[in-house]
Every structure is written in structure tokens, then in C-alpha cells.
Length: 285
Image (cartoon, helix red, strand yellow):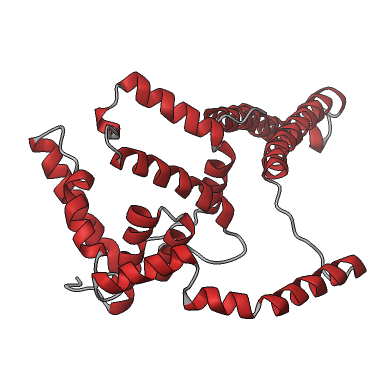
């Protein structure tokens, strides 16, 4: 069990809170999660979907911080359900992508940290149903965020420099802009020549393929069941006096027909479950 955070974990955690609380920058928040090891890297992770869903949460959090904003536990149940349905309709594609890719992981370093937060939240809600750990920690988060870059004065200067575009990274981008433009032109020319091939991920095609796979499997099972059923009937009528028409052989054939036939209702149930899952996120098949 860890007692303290290391420099990397502390810097990543502060950057994450700073991106959510002050800047409302979803890209910086995702970068912080990557440094913390909570967001997987790789070509199988749809970073755009992660950022879109994250931006929705950050926008709702910033609206709550405004004067007169309401927290989720202060909303009426009907209003909360309406907002959930609206978010699923707007971000249905992204939610399905996140559920399929599972981009978030929890390193062992943070296991006890999350357990501590969940225990505090659970005890607080048991004693007071209106208890909200996030609302209580806001003043303390502000004190933590003031130390993002070592002291509050340095953080303020960097924020002002970011707004006016006078940070070292901004000056570097200004100086290297011609080289960046030349690189983009080189990539465009190589794309025209066919040296590069673009890889495009289509979520609609993936869902259609998954659904077609279930349909094909059900069709295959139904065909096999009918095949063994017809074979059993043929053996019992035409070959009943031969070894193929013996009782053990016909029972085995009829048993195979029943076995494959039982797979069809199970496959249909999986297909209906998949359609209901997609419709829950506003995706109609």
C-alpha cells in the first residue's frame, strides 16, 4: 500500500485537476491521464471518442460551478433521465466506441487511493443522502492547483502567456512554422502518389459486421439442424435395415439436430440483446 505519490503521479494528478477546474481543456486532461497510466495508448484506442465524451463531462462540470448551477443529485429524477437520454443521443457513437475499446485502465498504484475515496463517499452518503464529496473538495482542489508549477505566481504568468501567445512553445511554433508547412505539403504529395494509405475506422460498419456475424451464425445453425433432421428421417425410413439405420446411429443424428436447433433461439436472443443495447444509445439498426 502506497503512502505518498511520486513526482510523476503528483504532476499528472495536478495537471488533470488543473485542466478540468481552470482551463476546461479536454486534451490536457487526456494527456494527464496518459501520464498517470489511466488512459491506454495505441492504435486500437479512439482518442477522438474519449475527448468528445470528456468534453461533455467537463462542460457539465463547468456549468455546475457557475452561479445557480445544479449538481446531479439536486436534479429531479425526470430531469436527470431526460439529460441522460439526450447525452446518449448526442454521444451514442462515442459511448459504444468506448465500451468496445475499453481505453481506461486503473494501475495498481491507484487502487487504494480510489478505495479510500469510495469509502469516504459511501460513509458520507450513508450519514447524509445529500453528501457530495466533489462539492466539498472544491476549495481544497483550488489550493492544490495553485501549486501546479511550483508556486501560484509562476502558474499565473504561464496562464497569461498562454492567453497572449508568448509562451516558449508558442515562439517555437512561430519559428518552425515554415518547416511544418513544408512537411504537410510533402505528406500531401506522397498521398497523391499513393505512397501513404489512410486507415479509416467506421463504427457503423463494425456494428453491421457484428450483427451480420450473429445472423450468419444463426442461419448456419438452422441449416445444420435441418440437415441432421432430414438425414435422421432418411436413415429411419430408407436405411432402417442397414447399419446406418440402427437405433444408436439415428439417435446420434437426431441428437445433433436437436443440439444445433437449440443454438438458434440462443442466437436470436443475442441478436435482440445487441439491438436493444444499440437502441439504448440512440443507434437504430
